[in-house]
Amino acid sequence: MKVAIIGTGYVGLPTGAGLASLGHDVTCIDCDHEKVERLSAGKVTLFEEGLEELLKSGLDSGRLTFTDSMEQGVRGARVVMLAVGTPENPNTGEANLDYLFAAVKQLAQCLEDPAVVAIKSTVPVATGDQVEALIHKTNSKARVEVISLPEFLREGYAVHDFFHPNRIVVGTQCREARALIRELYAPMEPSPKMLFVSRRSSEAIKYASNAFLAMKIHYINEMADFCEVVHADVHEVALGMGEDARIGSAFLKPGPGYGGSCFPKDTKALLHMAYKHGVELSLVRSTISGNVKRRELMAQKILDAAKDISCPRIAVWGLAFKEGTDDCRESPAIGIVQHLIKRSGVTVTAYDPKAMDNARKLLGNSVTYAPDKESAAQGADVLAILTEWPEFAEADMKQVQKLMASSARVIDCRFLAKS
Ligand code: NAD
Image (tube, rainbow, N blue to C red):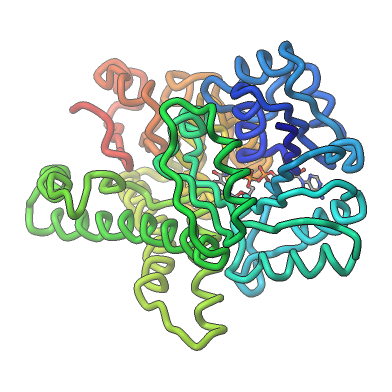
């Protein structure tokens, strides 16, 4: 099947490469010409385990191509997926749909053949209606069915999750569109669970899921604070809770709070959407504010560990918002570092196995960047572990302590280090 994907970011690229490996003829379209050139040459533009191999095999097979031309990319496509960013509007907290609507307008002008337009981007409920109207307004001859096909992949596991989705939610009442999406995923082994729902329900499922997971993270972080004062072990508590099938063990790991390009913006967008309709989502609201406070709390813990030192040197391990990715968008580690460097006299030396380039874009010259974790720790008064990379969990902390200043302390915000 010929498929076009608009947007080759963290969602579009693994999806495109994955669909090509299932035997489809995929063209990925991106307005970023440099990205298109790099990807066409087999160079990945973001880090995800297994993505480079998948990209290369797609290019070699001739089933995966990249272009910056919308017209060329969508020609003959039976399914066109929209996977452009829907970032937060910093003034209101709502989802900014400018990129989506710009892409839809360009797409509408090029649509000659009948197609299913699948919205993979995370969009507010009823955006499908707006996209449909915009396509018909731009091109009255367009023959399209607009559906919602939200993405649930986890960054750091994008390739794995493409091939092993726990469910594929398809939001449309159109029988032909449902059949086409079933055909699209038919080569997948084992065959994925597909849920067919209305377009609006599908749009809402994505927000409801992300907000629930964010709330679970916030909940266990609050439990961590509680356990600390009552001298209980939050890990044992999480284990005991997670064994209950009604609760489940995922997302019960205490830490510096959630981050990344989805949970922070999606919780705010959901709150905003509900508020506009007169509904107060108090749990989501307190999750958002609790997550902000969590970063301040972690930064304070790190600073407290250095309170007797006049100009403390703080080593930071981890800048990505979680392990397995180079993505620093809304990373708790970046937020914590920003709190630390606000204090006069504090200097930070940071290291991350994959996210240094992205971190540099956010932190600039405000910190020193170390080539490895040992160099970061060298001479430090405090070591803060902010991302759960396996290489930090596996580090010999006794050796690391020897590199640090004499009375140095380790603040393990991810609860990784062996004592
Ligand atoms: P991203 O910023 O990594 O990538 C978006 C890409 O779209 C960029 O390469 C950009 O150049 C391109 N683009 C923008 N406008 C375009 C246009 N008019 N034509 C062609 N290309 C255009 O974004 P992402 O992280 O992949 O997220 C995409 C969507 O998927 C968002 O709505 C996000 O909320 C949702 N989502 C993301 C994840 C994730 O883990 N990142 C998971 C689930 C859902």
